[in-house]
Image 1 (cartoon, rainbow, N blue to C red):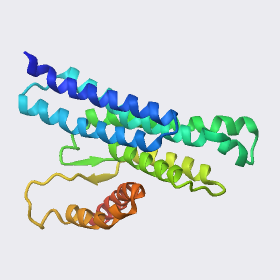
Image 2 (tube, rainbow, N blue to C red; image 1 turned 135 degrees about the vertical axis):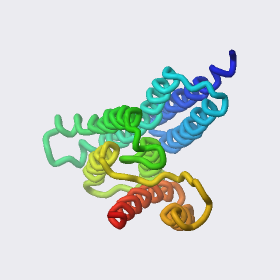
Image 3 (cartoon, one colour; image 1 turned 30 degrees about the vertical axis):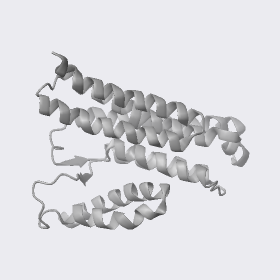
Image 4 (cartoon, rainbow, N blue to C red; image 1 turned 120 degrees about the horizontal axis):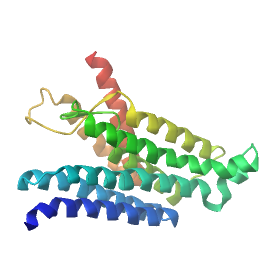
Length: 236
């Protein structure tokens, strides 16, 4: 039956989008890389939905989905950060340590890909994430880095030590990917205010951030993490 191949075809489109995003990342075109990460996220949203609607979910589809997600939301953002740290010798020119350490530093960006893979493996085995997330979702992490680096590069923003800030961010987001931190999902059982307060607050407060341009997307993801942490603390 043709319909059983439709979800996997959509998933492959997600994977291809991640490959194209990686190509643009290595060519210092971070905004196009971000665009194809977004396109991959759209395909990722629809593949599971289509599989459920057509009743053709399969184990191979689940494995293929994780592979595609690690390319689009793990390797592609790692390539963006690697390329940014490597371009024009920015790290080597401003590093206070040995030139060897400076040349190796950009490769730490690929820690994101490793932790994204670990996050996806945990997600496949974790039955607690039906209505929310435990740890930062890989699409959100990829969109954050694509928007942040795309904005920094596009507006030619540079300051002394920026590469160290980026690497610190890589380590923080890598930890958030696998952290035992409950994060809300934008899934609504009902449309009422009660029980959906955090979701509506998030959506309403994101509106002004849209006027920040490409940085707005990075700000929205950062705000999502902060609001999840606050909501988790208040719930306790």
